Image (tube, rainbow, N blue to C red; front, side):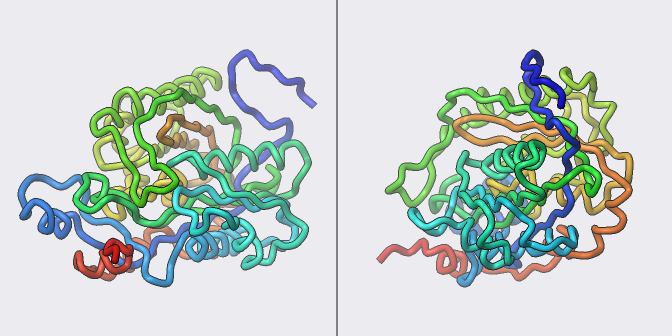
Length: 357
């Protein structure tokens, strides 16, 4: 066992760990940004994305997490009773007191011999659960650990956030390196107390600091995490075939990729926000699933999440030969995106319970 070496700040497991299964879920309902603009600005001005995904009346973080987790299990081809942790990260858990994770664990057949917990850290709740899963498996405490990042469409009516706050997410099943379709070489976290986005327990909708959410929030943390990880691993942008960043809109990930030295060909396949919006807790994770649907063995991937409050988690990943054996076993992320039913603002308001009586 390698002794703990804190000098570079990187989090490396003592044993080889990786992704043995992955799955995404995006609800079929879509509201276009033009429709939201028609309602609040008379169609004047630009819109930040094309459309966003909206969960239906019978969908919430629990149901969507179950679907994504089942897809991850289909690819992993394991007995769910071997999963020793089921962790769900979200900003929109359906209960304030009643864990989402236990319901997901029950539905996928992982109970009762498993640990379960709900995670919160704005949009990086899913990736912090991934880091805990790496530690759980890498230490030998668990054979498999499941991490989910999932959210419903939130946003105050008429607010800029309403254009981009969408529904959907992803599930990542962590296991031993010898079974992995994607090896996880290292991770790094970069956090500060930066209040760019918040929601009190009694509030229906989150608040945000407008332009403050870009600088010093999003860019400082993603670049800080990415640069520290690459420096610690002795890598540059040129060493990665793909990169995926948290996607609150279409412009932010493009700008951060350019600042870090990535080309459009390296990050474009993971750029989902123009088509489904920002899926919050699963934004970078669902971007990763889109990349894994097209990545080839030997490809290196840099993934960096962002959560308001604020912090970023960065991951150094490497695709293995097993990717070709598992990705066809469940629907691709693109398949979910292509299944769309467009709705108008009235239907959207009904689905998201925006009319308070």
